[in-house]
Length: 295
Ligand code: HEC
Ligand code: HEC
Image (cartoon, rainbow, N blue to C red; front, side):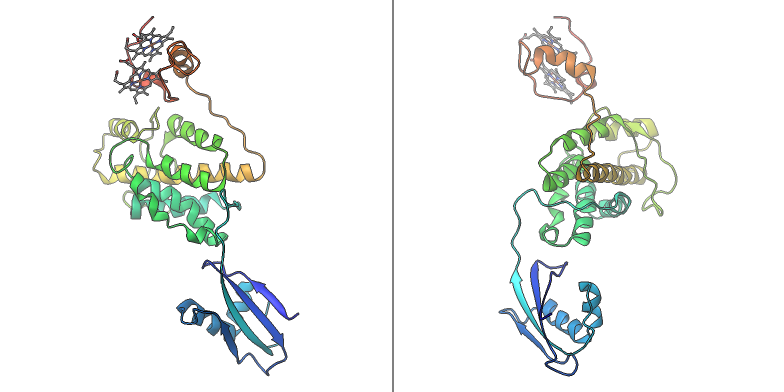
């Protein structure tokens, strides 16, 4: 074989290795056919190629004979159309990654980096092209406003990167609202070891979630326990999101979330099919509107 093709997974360039056998006794010559010869990555690559072993191992085939001239060509890879192809990843690995990322850039970044970071490592291009820090804005329900919990912002962005099936976003919103968190138990906790009080938010809002947990646990918002709790929820939502994406990849995804009775009842008049048609929400109406009117 004279021509091999190898896509380097960690940079967004296609690296073509062209072997012409028996030119030399031993891998001694490396021609880098590129306009950007000076790129450090490339010089390193070339070094690895001379060594033979490292590149052979990564590429999945060996440069055994040691009698080739290696010509390396650098070609920019195209960014594919949205949505990008998803490859199943390990929910536990993504959860761990996201738990750690939370302490670097907050909840929205935690989930987004947990999932996209895992894809970046497993798949490489095009996931290498996403600067996941773009999700930092979502922390504290968007820079501390207490609106949409950042884990849902991060999960929604990750889901919508790889699929147009927004049913998964709906599902994670519902799962978040209905489930007692935190569940995740880190091997080594960052802030506080041991089990933490669980609470159900009944709402996708950061404010409702945090304040109800403070009430249930007795800890202050500004406590290490609260930070630990949010870090673990980041892992929980990442795990759930990856499980759903993996199910979708297996054509096994089934939506399970059912909207609360209040949404069905109140929206029969206030929702888009009702006479008043003045409300757009799937949040539990009762979580804010306590005095029920009887019109
Ligand atoms: C049978 C129809 C119907 C249902 C069901 C219904 N509403 Fe209403 N709602 C009305 C009407 C009619 C008004 C008055 C609208 C106006 O004055 O413009 C109203 C007004 C309101 C208002 C404005 C303040 C007020 O009390 O007048 C709120 C808030 C409200 N509804 C919330 C809810 C919630 C929450 C639910 C479910 C628990 C609900 N509604 C169920 C018909 C309904
Ligand atoms: C996160 C809290 C929250 C949730 C959940 C919520 N609302 Fe509201 N709603 C508000 C706020 C805040 C307003 C504006 C202030 C007000 O009028 O009470 C409002 C206003 C309204 C009004 C208009 C009141 C008026 O004065 O005319 C209606 C009708 C209403 N909501 C219905 C609903 C229905 C139906 C649901 C469930 C699908 C719902 N709301 C869910 C907070 C909420």
